Length: 128
Image (cartoon, rainbow, N blue to C red; front, side):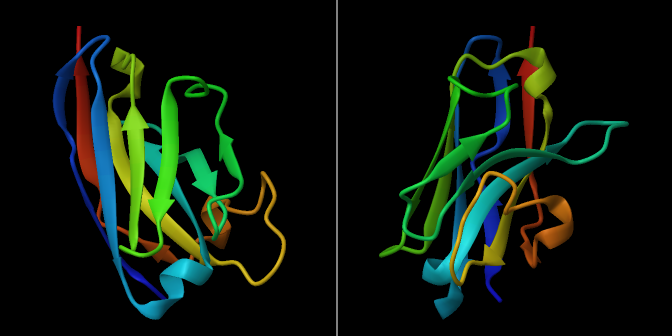
């Protein structure tokens, strides 16, 4: 398993940008599919984006497609989420997530039930 620590959350105005980072410890990072989830107040946690272990494939929820970009640096054991054109409905606690990826990677590979490692979360608040 990997241990995950998020950073970069904060308060931003509508239309602004934020970059979240997730620092991972452990050798399993480079062999894990990674992703971001979020949970807004009173709502269930939802999938935002995922990336394959080599960074060659990415998937996004429709709600963030075209605005958010997920990326990873296996040499530095880091995962990032660049968030642009932020909206009030993007307000949530954002979680970094990991799941070992031995072979295939698909759009449904990283579901909440399949995640094996979670970060503690970082708050993102978008003010109007």
